[in-house]
Figure 1 (spheres, rainbow, N blue to C red):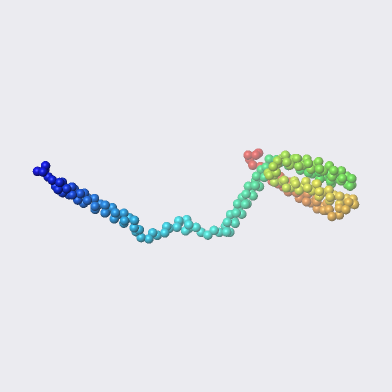
Figure 2: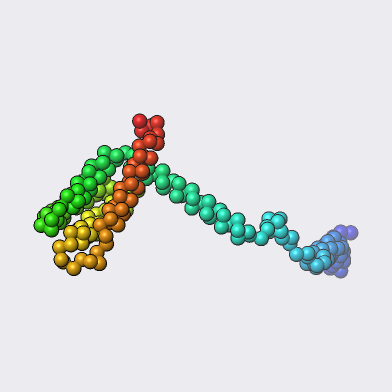
Length: 214
């Protein structure tokens, strides 16, 4: 009878259920533990990672090739700068001609002086002439970084300020002790050299006018 089952009978049924539950859980738990333990164990020594292909294929640098490339780059920049300056001076040919006219007029004032007094008058007027030349150059190239002829103009201004009058005084032999001054022929030759360089550059600039500037 069900109603007459005692406490011992109920304990027996509970024990049977517990055994059955343990039988179901035990093997899977042990299996899980063994799986985790196997996963934690290293499978063997890990080989080092292979070096990237690019690193293995890299060749030693060639110093000579590097120098050639650097020199080619400098030449490229020099050509670019030359073309830039030619373009600037091509667009300012009229201003260059005006500057040259002032320089040649200032030079004639020294060359035409035949006496020390005439030379002194020419030297007295020279600062105003040089100031006019400098104003023209600055008006053309305000920042002083565009025209190829700036150095030649500066050299000619210095000659008119110092070298030319000193050489002319020595040539006239006015007794002022200028025997160590440069000879007038040497000063004139150097002056002509700068004028020739200016003329050649302006001729090249005017002869190579691009179609879009015509």
